[in-house]
Image (tube, rainbow, N blue to C red; front, side, top):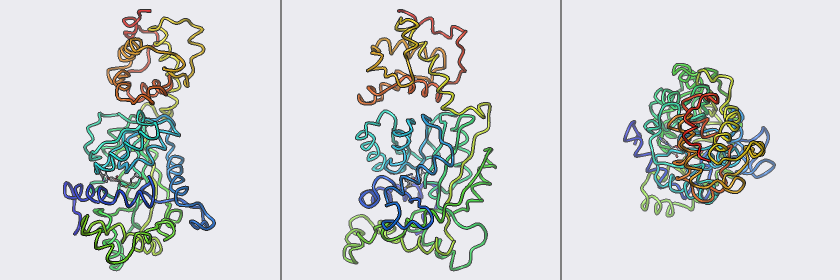
Length: 407
Ligand code: SAH
């Protein structure tokens, strides 16, 4: 019954989230993770309800790790996209979400579409350790309650470092285990949780800190949120009882979907015991990829790019200096600036010539739905340049922009 490692583990995780998708969504909504409460708050009584608490956990992780607005984010283990849509919506980030479950990826895509965010949030069925994204593709690697499912944790930290650009941030929140040796009964509790939740083993928050440093991260910090999240397994929060309609119903579900669906029902009491005894812990980690950009956040970088990016657009549209003065990060290409498609193509060519081949605005726009195209702003284009450029800005050089000048 041990989920094992490698391909066998991935198949088991994929299956688990495929067959529990509707159960989790029905009970917990779009957030497949713990909630966050202040001391003394009791879910459903005097404290934040389940949905507010899960939203809060996302905001706490953003705040602790310092995710900058408008970042390019890789969401490792995206579930059905609840956290990703917060990052893409309220924070204006561009998110690539990966999950092992094809059904989760499809559901997350539907939700992004429904929220009008399909242009900023895309979801893929991919193994987080083999995504194929190029080096330095992201400002942020975000892993909310997925690290426990990965057996090769050193490889996770190495891959996150590879995918981040210098100055980029790693943001992790994860189930964990108390540091040090466990007694026999504690090991037995841990073994049952792992088995039911399709996780290979737990590691401690201290271990994650060591792994991040060993991989080459700087500014590594962790925080223990065990007390803040433990309420999540309170029956009124977990709501699993609503499904626990007796043996016959459990048998029916297990017959229909396979016995591993039952792991979902077993988690509540086991996790409650885990938190009560202090064997199970929960915490967040932040770490920064060292490099020349240290100090300058990706968002600040994007801000400084708004002007030169708009200037390139002015060149291809033939507008004057007064027009340029009126352009702000919030100016919409479609509604405010009325950029024509051939101008967009010329602008895209100019951006690539100046900032490198990966700044493919035309390709980016081609992947967006109509709603996202309508919403696209000059600030979004600057953020795209900030996330993908491999050349620093060179406003004095011709940078190839002249070739796009036709107005
Ligand atoms: N972060 C989401 C979902 C957490 S559930 C949320 O907070 O709502 C755990 C997620 O991790 C699932 O989507 C699962 O498919 C994903 N996962 C586990 N192992 C993975 C791997 N090796 N590669 C990609 N995703 C993985």
